[in-house]
Amino acid sequence: MDMLGGLTPSEFLRDYWQKKPLVIRQAFPGFQCPVSADELAGLACEEGVESRIVIEDDNGKPWQLHNGPFSSDRFSTLPEQNWTLLVQGLDHWVPDIADLLEHFRFIPNWRLDDIMASFAPTGGSVGPHYDQYDVFLLQAQGHRRWTFGGHCDQSSPRVEGTPLRILSSWDGEETVTLAPGDMLYLPPGIGHHGIAEDDCITLSVGFRAPTIDDILTGFTDFLSNQSDASDHLNDPDLQVQDNPGTIQPDVVDRLEDVIREKLGDRRQLTLWFGQYSTAPKSMDIVVPAEEPASAEDIAEAVNAGEQMRWNEGSRFAYYDFDDETALFIDGEQFLLKGDARPLAQLLCSAAQVDMAALARHIEDEALLGLLTTLYNQGSVYFE
Image 1: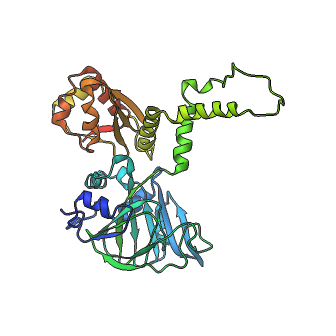
Image 2: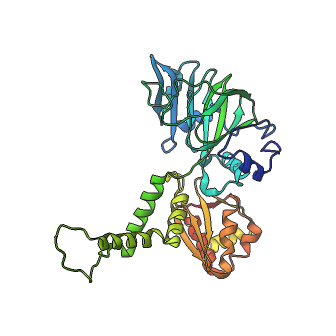
Image 3: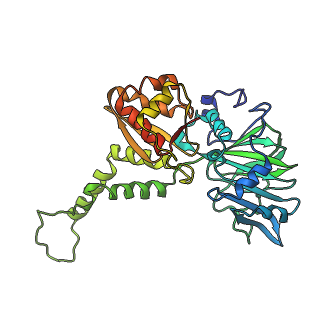
């Protein structure tokens, strides 16, 4: 399979990632969608599954949004054409969908958001719009005509009377029709509009990046929860001043020193980001095992060659410090030292863990205990 149309991952990242769109014909030759339209509708009726219906003309109102979960008879009331069902986080619920993500591991785990499914009958779309994230649009069933191109931002004119950010005066620069197995990559800010030419399903592999606000508020909140955050600002060298209302420069200097010291702590920044970037998007899927396992149970399963894999909603990442490795899983951190450090790389490299390599680690009682914890908290399971 030549997923990037003859480009190596390095060439793609150099020439296209966050730079310009790319149409890839038969990125997944002979692709067959692992889910049907009826199964997507069934998921949209489930609590805990994020789903939406977009109707282009809803009783005279343009581009109206309806949020799930839906009742089963909701779909019988929809018009024959010009609507779309969106099911977010499909990879969290369908292992075969989650396996598609292995083809995108040339992009760091922490950048991955999820896979969204879009089903539409003829004419269905979610309107011309732009996103703030990178996305690969894989045609999974039927045909969709995409028009795309031109950079858009907050100043781009929008349609009034809709909760969606629909572009009102946008023409695009290129038009293509995707068949099953074809894929379109779009960087952030590129306008695009996809219209179903028949009953079609599109899988959107989305990638995220934190906003500056996310970084500032998230890290400062993290620092505020540290044990020394309750310490008070001290001033043992306080001097009498001419006017008690004056805020002296040395006070601001002291404040600046405190902020620089805290914000400049690279280790704390790393630990916060590892936890922040691996926090699961859905707490409804990463749930404790129904029957907790003992360390002996885990060892027996590993030695028997059973396949361990990530929970479809879990996120894994790690960071190598000079003297230890921080392993981040579902918003938690585990610090590994010495011979235990390679376990982090092993667990993070793929959703299906290399069991032969893992078997060599369970001889360490502490590492076996870590695997048992991950299993019992729902971050991994055995197929």
